[in-house]
Length: 236
Image (cartoon, rainbow, N blue to C red; front, side, top):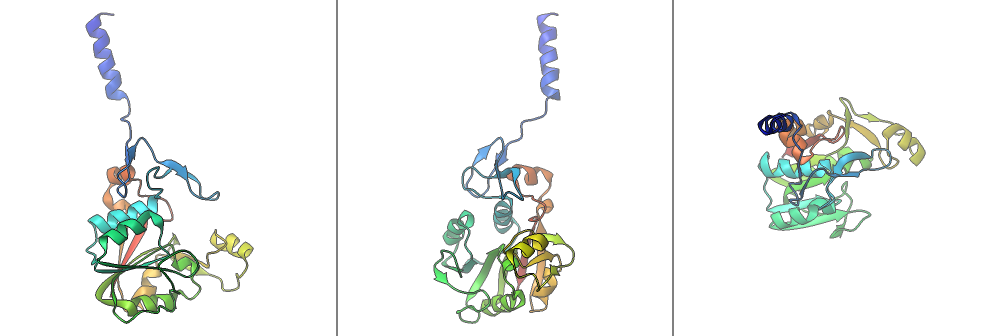
């Protein structure tokens, strides 16, 4: 084979070879060939956890939605159960910022079903994977509505498993909850009808999905995982 023929063959092989996929974390700016393996034993998956900030698909999706697809007022932000992957960013965006949690580290200890805050005092409420732990979630939703200013928004993420929410109040042991809800501290499997629960309290509901951003962005930023593909935005 001549030199020119060999060069032509190499060009053909390079053209046929799949392009190397590059991942990019929009939260911390990390770039690499792929994300790390991560998740719980029951939900472990490859190409999920950012080596830079530790964020998973749902964190990157919420960040990307907030930065590109939603008109949010960060004047006064209330962050419930603050995940470290997003708390620094939210604190930096907010003119006023308060994080709360009933059990874990936060700026204030507070129950989301009984917020010790004034009516209409926040412009943005942020809670990721909180409500599936709350037995009285409708009471929590009512409190969210109360503390938001008119026009304020709640950014909510929960695992979505179906169209209709499944609950069983008789499931009170960790073992039974693990069996029914796939995690021993969950109290329900949410469906897309979570929007109806918020609408019943006076919210206007919107959902943004990972797939809305198209396959290239979805893959590069690692936005999608089966039960965390939705970000709900509820406006008072």
